[in-house]
Image (cartoon, rainbow, N blue to C red):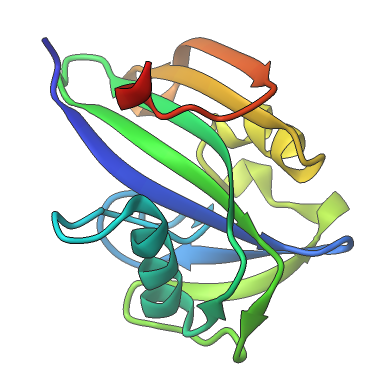
Length: 162
């Protein structure tokens, strides 16, 4: 059975703008993305999401809401990345650059999808509409989406509860 790695992704936005970060190093470098990363053994998924936003963008998120769970698989790699996607519009501080990310605000109609992961153009619009969802994406060479499944949900249930 494939091994799952639990990760977080927090998208900060209001009615007009979305805060994204340009990934400067590591996995996904050179792409705009939300803020997130690994969940350590001693923290909850929500606490990990808050910590990652603080580490990568220098802001403290107050209210976060889980909007989605997406599984990412890369052809030839047995590990599945299970990403818990959160929304926040309430935070303290001004976004600032870190070693890992360079944050910038984008108008909702000007999100740079061509400089993001290819799956983002499928689920980010649902996310910004306040919808809850579950998805699976299979990537091939050059991060091409080979297969996908994305469905809107009434509520989010973690995979360990199903």
